[in-house]
Length: 459
Ligand code: FAD
Image 1 (cartoon, rainbow, N blue to C red):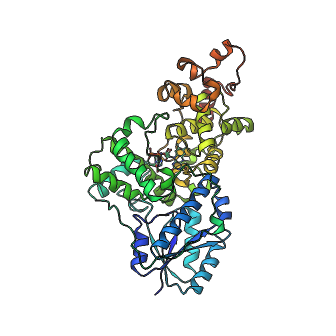
Image 2: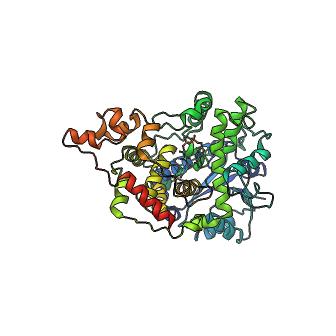
Image 3: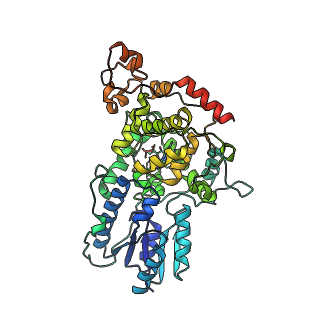
């Protein structure tokens, strides 16, 4: 009996039941595949890859302290992976593999192909709070609306106590860890710490200082009012169930007081869950199809110059431009802004949501197929329980509401640094009164663009 643990996007020692089970059953080795070509096919951003590599390196070191060897193997893509796995398994006489399930179609197919090499693969659902397929309507189907999904989720989970602090113990004396060349970091993601003791501080700070006002601060991009933990969740560096456990440790009835600020945070974690379940039940979402086929005939304009202006943050709409520059410069964007820029691209510019989805993926440090696709299809109105097509965000009023003083805009659109708050949300008349300006002219006029979008979606 020689079990093995296979790390994927579950790069953690804490709250990893699959890993604990593997070690309890005698696993002394773990495995991670570096799959550059597959990552390219999935459009994974270079900043996320850098973070992933730093974290695998860190894990290798932590595992070595516990006497567990992490093998890092390079393979091209998911086509070549089963053969690489087979070789490893034969060479090391592996009997059983433990891992966490991933729900994207390519990952599911990879696991299916690996199961055909004749090894016992035991898969756990460590990336979700309830496995896909377990939260269904009375008729046994996936919910198509979020609120009843959430209610069903709560009726299963609200009295559950989520465990905290379960971690792997040492199995023997420490061994040596040497960073493989393929894990060398290019430093892009260094602003995001990957060491557990620092991440722990970020989690505690959120729970003790921010969670109680999350509901009022979560929509203001100039405030760090959200957890900022999405990159860690996307790579499985922290477990969603441990996060809930931590909140429960502070307020044991957090899953019952559904009007509380803390619950509004959990509400977002349930959205994450909803999109994962949807992707599992509707694999077409991984293949770029609209959830709602009614919109298959929308005539996207896909004007190249508009797309370029949007990508660069040069649309002439300050809140959109500040948001896109935040993404380009940091690899992260505030949720309110993701909704605004996605609406602007798909409605004001009538550009296919798939272009935006792909651009986001190529830049985000927290890029995650299910949440990204869910967010884009929500904004484009093509998704499951999406924004109705006729509700089109006005980028000027959104800006006035969520960045009233223009604090966030000024941080990223330096051309507007000295524009007073009153004018900053649409500064063109103000700027022209002063002559020359180096800020972009608006690439569309709001009202006309809105009418154009309504007409396109009605057809
Ligand atoms: P918090 O406000 O602290 O939220 C807590 C956690 O809940 C997040 O870390 C995240 O894991 C989850 N979450 C929050 N909002 C959502 C949501 N709307 N849908 C699903 N999960 C959510 N999130 C990603 O993790 N990866 C993506 O690639 C991604 N792409 C998006 C694209 C668009 C167009 C939109 C509108 C949203 C997208 N989101 C994505 C969701 C959301 O914007 C981010 O999760 C959030 O901004 C991350 O910041 P945070 O950790 O501070 O969030």
